[in-house]
Image 1 (cartoon, rainbow, N blue to C red):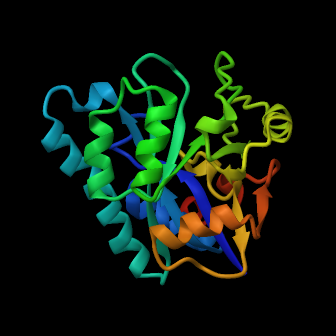
Image 2: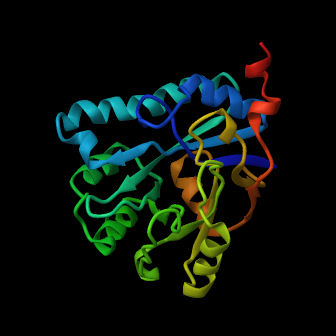
Length: 232
């Protein structure tokens, strides 16, 4: 069985992230994860000054994580936490590559429907993250592939039971779980357990669509209390 994190951030790309790629990978390896989706924030303001320069900076985080993960035989998958210009709500995009990221730079003012179509046409999945953390924004089920029903960030009230109910009532196809990791105390609280480890971004999307996994939702787990990082 393989544990896969579906929602994690690294510094300095995500301004709120506190873990470098090395620190993130080391911690997740210690708690037995085999794969991590790097979902750094993808926000309009980041790209306004120098879109090309920031895109290279953004993608470098994936490459740094891949280099670190290779030391432990772990897999890194490319994702993004996307925010439309008109809303404060966040959305997870899975299965991204450089081509899709470039297209996303020009889509901050898209409708949900048009963005969903863009992501799907490029082989990705469009998932609403922690839908009840901020003011509630209900997206038509036809404009989503999935919803994060377990957001395990310990510093926010993400109202996971409400997210799970929303998914069931509106019959949103796919459901995910993620630690929303920004710092050590978030490590290993969420994700999925799969019988196999996807080889690439495309296979990760197929796994999510299959639903053949268990959710990780460790409400009482705190890596700070067990991690070797704090015992050196």
